[in-house]
Length: 303
Image 1 (cartoon, helix red, strand yellow):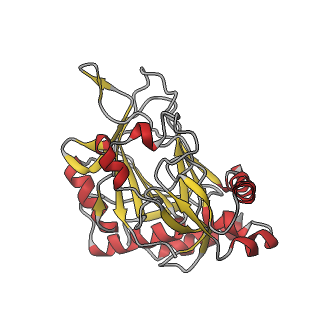
Image 2 (cartoon, helix red, strand yellow):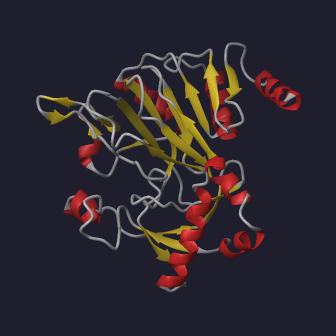
Image 3 (cartoon, helix red, strand yellow):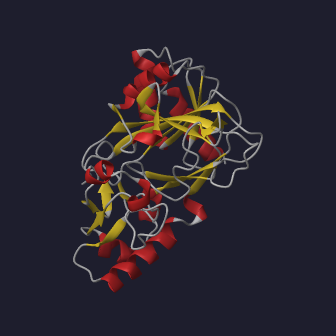
């Protein structure tokens, strides 16, 4: 315990006087206090970016942001981008995604369930997402938690032979592809013809090297948004067996951090290059309203 405390204090000493970064228990995530996300100095922005690289998931509470201010905050981590499904976009800003289980005039206010499965944002696009951030507008007293998993820890804890086997392998990904075309979550039911045309198959490395830290992490996802069509160079049975083994390992609770939303005005920021996540709003009762804004930034082609 004392060695952990000492490491955290040394870590915090690197940051500006008003900004404090505290690791959340034994998890990889951290809470950031002492800053206004709408008026960051250059030094604070640089420190926040370093904390984001170090901890992978950051919690920033006590903020008060408009849609435009949230978008501006997102640009600190790269170019903010539109979601490929138009119905997911905020009516006032297409680069902001509106997540909500609420209704207005009998119509959904936003997207009720955008990801109750494990995924990484834009993993199915040629250029994936670097950062994603959520901003809480309305939060229920219970429910709607968000789960995160550290994909670098997942990779590091693979059996040595399995790690050697997957290094250098590629797979094919296509947004919401599945063998079951009748699935209401599949691309054939979920997207327009233009949206499907704009999300062709892409080839992804199973192991990704983080472009800023140089660390390796598993970069394949069990959720339907990743639409894993198979591993390059393997027949369907061998590919399916290997994927099942990897998915079982990477969803182990020891690699996870569970965030419980408590208050409006909270930003949760994470690094899609080394973290996957899932929501729990699919079965949230209508009286427990949860409304969030979401932004992702344009990243690089994984390698």
